[in-house]
Length: 309
Image (cartoon, rainbow, N blue to C red; front, side, top):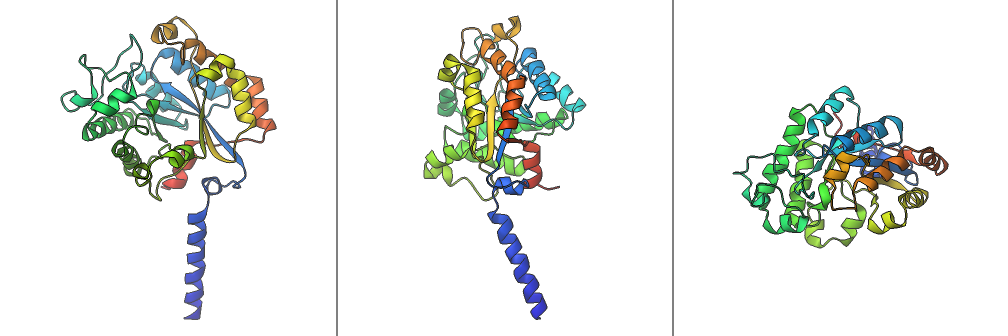
């Protein structure tokens, strides 16, 4: 009897220890290690976006990307995924369409999601309009359609994130759907600690022990672009926090196609994306990562820890 009691307590201690581990420790690192996912957004928007991202993932430290399923060049991404089954590809869940002349609608039948579309049948061009007009149950129909379409096309999503933050910054009910779908499909969902700290209790209450919180989600903004992207990225890498961090970037070539897609919007436009590509395929970037002792990790690793097969 004494032997069984000892075994029981040892098992209990082991379980408590596992539950109290940080995400870094669950991945096999120390809590003080600097871990980084370099994450290319917006795959599927354009051929330029795709090929720049594929090249950066093959040759540079960029080790993850996310796909916008309603976009016109998504089949090219599906082909890449099938040829590169170990590529870390998630879904950039898309509820908006911000470009002037390139427009897309929902993947779900429009008669099932009328609150998600404008008078022309396209998704709204901003998160505020989406949040004000979208019915939560219709948003869930569309989100499921995007995840199911990816799986049907042979893509095995390693994570979910949200284009323009629309599922995080609107309502607690939309945030709850975002988290719920991750748990249901066994796909990690991107949520940052800064958001959780600033969020109201209505949002915080939606987070459970089965969800993960990323230490920081970092991305360049307009002032960083105006003062120099390379300088921003160097400063970001040299001041990285310990724990798991995600650096969101946008890779494309400053060519005629991307200039047409992003016409009228210099922020996050073709030149911005070219500068992202230039930095993250540079020798300088690789040297900074090595100098700072940064360990590159992937969403696929996190997925295996969260949802072991």
